Image (cartoon, rainbow, N blue to C red; front, side):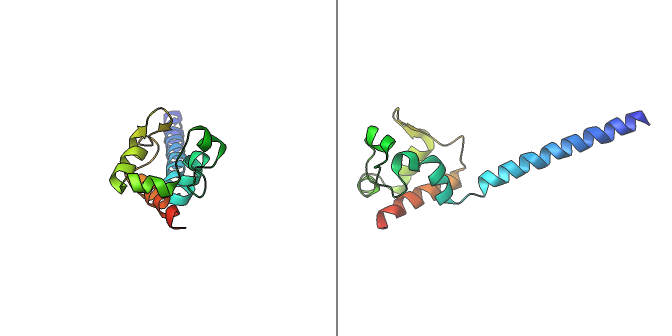
Length: 113
């Protein structure tokens, strides 16, 4: 009887852990491109893509309108995935390829606003 209770308790703990893990994962995956950009990119690139934030100015981040003249979608996706130089970390560990593509498209879209 005791072993059965221990087995049930262990099963419930594992099930609970899986529920928490899936909720956390779903929350990260469910963010919009604008939310991800705001969380990970806007501190340097600015909410409008102009790069006029304190950190953006310090790192000499270019305005999105200039960036899209130099880099196509594939190049920007590669930069967002792998990083660029010492100042920009890649997001391959934090974001899925689909999220990275969506954020790149969102960023490029800021040039049209």
